[in-house]
Image (tube, rainbow, N blue to C red; front, side, top):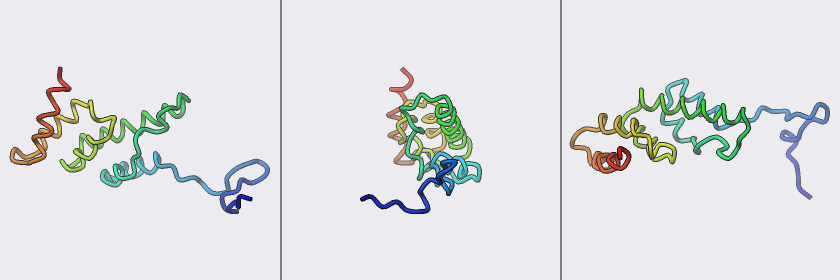
Length: 123
């Protein structure tokens, strides 16, 4: 028989969880609100419930993606921006790749990968 942890068992009527759930999308947004770009990227697992077509999930997915992207483009260090560019959704983000090229020093060894990636996006 499967044991149920009492703190996670729903209450009988009305049926609710007795503790609030910690949702990674909320954590990402909270870190972004406080300027914790690296922390937000560390817990970001990709797009929120990518296969869901539920309107509220699509709204949350869009809001998190826009807030993350804008925070990264406007406030990130080159290292954080490069970490963002490793996310699947950012692979085709021309503006983000151009921003990385602008932020990286000319002698940075990481610059060549950005220079190599940009022409494929701009075709």
